[in-house]
Image (cartoon, rainbow, N blue to C red):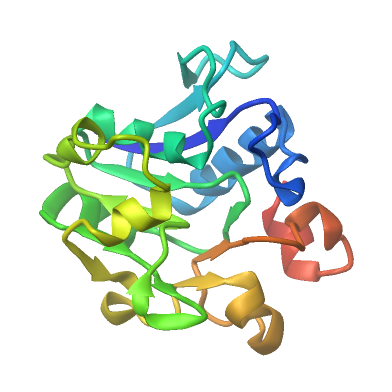
Length: 205
C-alpha cells in the first residue's frame, strides 16, 4: 500500500530558526490535506523522536534522538522500501494527487522537484518514491539529505506534470495557486504566517 510519510522532532542545536515552529498540529493538517485530495488508500507514517498525541491511524516510528544529527535524518523513511510520497511538514496538498500516488505504485525511479532557484538540479521537498529504493537509506552515511538525493537516480516532477508540485516562495507567491496540487515551503514564510491567504486557509486545516 502507498505510504505518505513525514517527520517531526523537537528543535535542537542543529535546527534552523524557521523550522522550530512544528508540532503535532502540523502533522494533522498535513495528513488531513492528503485525505481530502487522495482517493487511493494510503498509510499515514510519522517518523518522530517520541510518541505524539495523534489519531491511531497515524503510524509512529519512534527513533530516539531523531534530528540530533541534523536534517540528514530526513532520509530515514526510505528504509520502509515501499511506495511512498515523502514530504516535509511545511507542505500543503491543494488538489487531487492520485496521479502522483500511481506514479509511486507503478514507476521504478524516484521523482523530485526541480530546485526553484537552480532548475538544473533537484530539491527534495517532495519525493515520489517507488518500492525498491530502500538502498537510499541503507547506503546513507549522514550526508546532507538534499545533496544525497541529488546523487540518486531521479526524474523531475516538473517535467512529468508541469505546475503540479511547486514552491511557495519560488512560484506560487508570485503567480498564484493555479493548478498546483502540492505546495511546499522552504526557509522563511510558512503556512502559519499566511492567515490572510485564502487558499492557505482553505487547504491547511
